[in-house]
Image 1 (cartoon, one colour):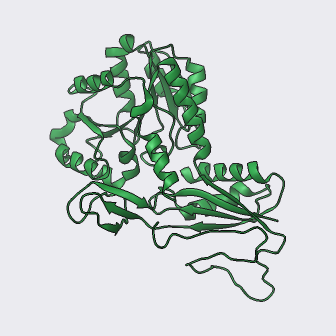
Image 2 (cartoon, helix red, strand yellow):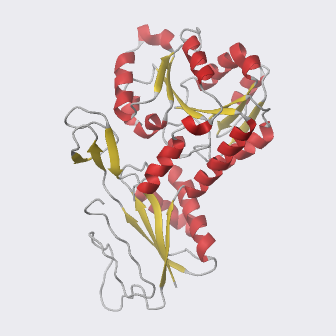
Image 3 (cartoon, one colour):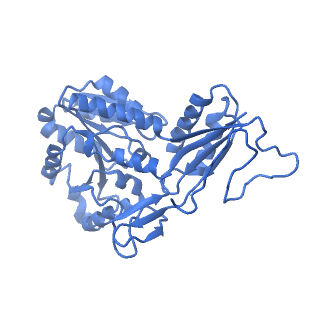
Length: 271
Length: 109
């Protein structure tokens, strides 16, 4: 056990025995009643994301039961998630029998683009919300009703911060970074790249015009995530997409390849 | 601002256990590498707890710093961020502490 692990041991009806190694920010002067004898301490010791993780586990079981693969696609706004999905659906949509769940704060513009390819799509508007959570995916799956053995792409809200913390129960997490964003993104947003099963560098057709070093980007990804797969593509020209399609073919519906469970375990065990 | 939904989840989780009882304090453990900002949670807590039995409760947040162990040289070292790199050059690093995101206990009247 780490040596300065704080023990919040609270006996019932005890007078204040908070073994702190930090200072209380409030005054302990006369008249200050800190925990009266009537106060009871209830030990909870649960992950703050426990409810989401439980719903995610249900999603994972539901998907596995139907043999449906679900890919949680995340990136900053404008990295090309929708363009990549439109191209992927045009090339493979029939074979994968793929549907899409679109997450955006507002509008159905992205869903309209998917629908134009002729594949089923459900739009979820999060309003003020900055990410999809497991409950939203549950509702999205209910509405999409994907058939057995099909594939679901979940286009998360464009955001490299918040979606990283919310397990949806997906089969794998795919993070897209575009060459116009800079090759230092993995270190600026380590939680997102740490969670990734696959990192796609998109807009490779623009590489001649921008200061983006693909090898440097991969090196930075490796510093936060030694195990993520990595492909470089241009969703516009089609360059490199074969590697992305091969990766998709290699992922089965079995959910045991996802490391989300591992993350939850490490969060739970770390205390 | 994922802290808002996490704090909403916190209040819901507490209310599940405490019901109508007045909650006077909430003890959390939010590690420095958890991806959640304690100050943002404090800000959200006042908003989310308003009108519930948690209104006015003190929010104590224990903030353990990052600690890691290198699986190659077995060295243990402070980890200020999620760049998993040991001084020996190995990136095979295990995070021992700092990713906690836990509701530890509550005090009820």
